[in-house]
Image (tube, protein in one colour):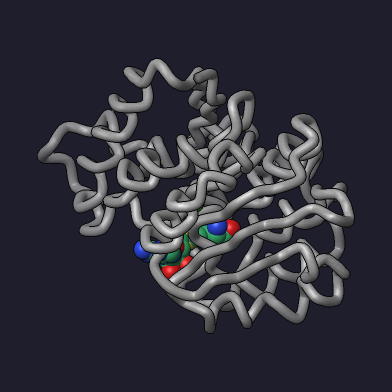
Length: 247
Ligand code: SAM
Ligand code: CA
């Protein structure tokens, strides 16, 4: 698809650089978005965290810079104050959220791995937004179950970003639909799952892509059929489905 006269090697290199972060057919087009609109406007701490994360062996998990910019804008557009994030890794989407929230905004952030969170934490602290974050180490489901038990948590979150174990997304949905407010928003990440949602079952796929694919397909069907939400599936990053709670 490259139409800018670049050689194949350069295209391959670019593709490796961006991994599966973009579903655009042309890597050059994705690079254009990054270089024209994203990197020049990326806050310094986010750049620092992105570069630090790029050196980590699991860097494929990080939120892409264009998606970080998107999350930051959505949070401002809906005037979110109280948010939740399931799946933090080194904190790129967390920092995008924290920077968008007002001074007294709050993020309940959950991850089974504290070590990776602590890699990014010094950057988040220097950015002056760590006071907005309540990090809980451990699996998210029991935390959600505990929150559900108290009626005052129901309908109390403005925005929830889900970016963790795809085989639990439907379990998360059952709970967070009660916790997000009517008119509030949930973002489910990776709902196009490396494009595998339309791949024939016998297509070559990385093992983890194949494993989680059925869960993503099931989630997408369930969200489309859920009358409590309005949805919008966007081909940003690896696909993000925005859900607005309506009842
Ligand atoms: N949002 C992150 C970012 O911007 O870099 C990326 C998150 S990464 C794709 C998924 C994360 O989910 C991993 O850090 C993993 O440790 C975490 N995770 C996996 N299973 C989990 C669970 N049951 N509860 C909470 N976090 C979980
Ligand atoms: Ca993701």
